Length: 341
Image (cartoon, rainbow, N blue to C red; front, side, top):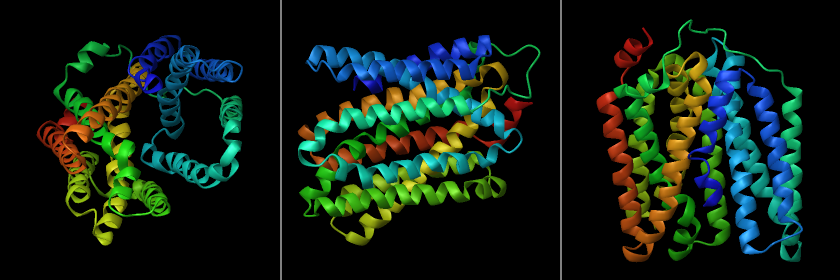
C-alpha cells in the first residue's frame, strides 16, 4: 500500500522538474539508480519500521519513472503514436514470463532469495535506460498552456475521473480474484491459468491496437473499454461458477486493462502536449493506478468482509459503469478535436 500510495504524488513532482529542465532521460536514470540503491536496504535489516521506510523511499523513485518513460516513448513514436501498444505489449510478456518462472525459483525455503531476484531485475531495468538516448517532443508550443488551465477543461476532468473509477473498480479483482475462485471450488492451478489467460488476451489486444486506432475513434474505444469492464465484474459476481462465462470474463481483460490503458494513455498524450507531457502522464498514473488503485484495494477489503464477494464485484461493476457514463457524456471525438484546435 505504501508503494502504491506514493504513485499518487511522486510522479508529478519529478515530471514537473522534467518538463521544465527538459532532461527527462537523466531524471529517469537517476530515479532508477536511486530505486536500486534504496531497495538494497531491505536485505540487511528487516524490521517492520525499517521495511516501511524503505518501501516509501523506493516507491517515490520507482513510481516516478514510468510516466516519464511513457512520454519519452511517445516522442520516439512521433506521428506513429498509434503504435504505442506494440511497445507496451512487452511489459505484459515480461509479466507472463515472471509469473511462470519465478515460482520455481523461490519455492520452499528459496523464498529467502526473492529480494535478490527483485534487486537483480531492478538493476537490469536501470541499466537498459543507459542504452536509450533522450528525445524531445518534435512539436513544441511557443506558449504552452498552463497546467491549471488544462486541468479545468471538462474533457480532461472527465478523463482523469473515469480513469480513477476504472482502476478503483479493479481493486477487488487484483486483491481477491484467486481467493474468490478457490471459494467457488476452483483449484489454485486453475486460478493461475485464469490469470495467464487474462494477460494473454491483453497481449493480443496490444498487438492489434494500432489497427483499431486507425479504424475507430479513440474516444469510442475508451468508452467501450469502461462499459465492457462493468459487464465483466457483473459476470464475475453472478456467474463465476459457469466455466465458460469465467473464461469469457478473463478474455474481457483485453478491454478492461489493455484497451483502457492504450486509449487512456493516448488521450493523455493528446490533451497534455509539449511541455505538459510528463505531468500529463504523471497525472494519469497518479489518478488511476495511484489514487484509484489504492482506494480500490483498501475499500474492497472492507466490502469483502462486510458485504461478501458477490456484492463486492457488483459494486465494482457499478463503479466502472459510473466511469463509463461520465466518459460517454464528456469525452467525444468532437470535444477532443475542439481542444486540439
